[in-house]
Length: 118
Image (cartoon, rainbow, N blue to C red; front, side):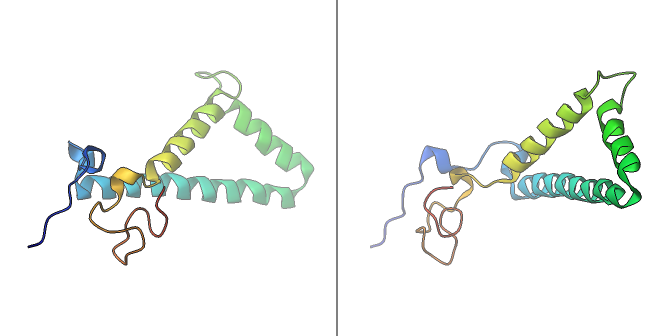
C-alpha cells in the first residue's frame, strides 16, 4: 500500500489569480519584459560613451532630471530601481513554488532544481 506524502501548509498553491499556473506565467512574462527593457535601455544609454564625454554626461544628467515637473531630481530613478528589485524578487522561485512530492535531487525538479534551499 502506498501512502501519499503530506503537503505542508507552506507548499500549498497560492489562492487567487497569482496562484494559478496561468497567473504565475503572466507574472513571469511581465517581470521578464521589465528586465529586458532595462537591459536594452541600459545598452542604448551606454552606447552614448562612443559619442564622447559630453553626450554621455548629458545622458546621465537626463536620467536624473527625467520627469522633472512631477518628480524631484533623481526620484524617478529610485522608482525604477524599486520596480526592478520587485521584478527580480518576484521572478525568483521560492520553496512554496517547488514540487512538494519530488525529492531535491529528482529529475522533476524538487525544490528549485538541485538545491534544497532557494
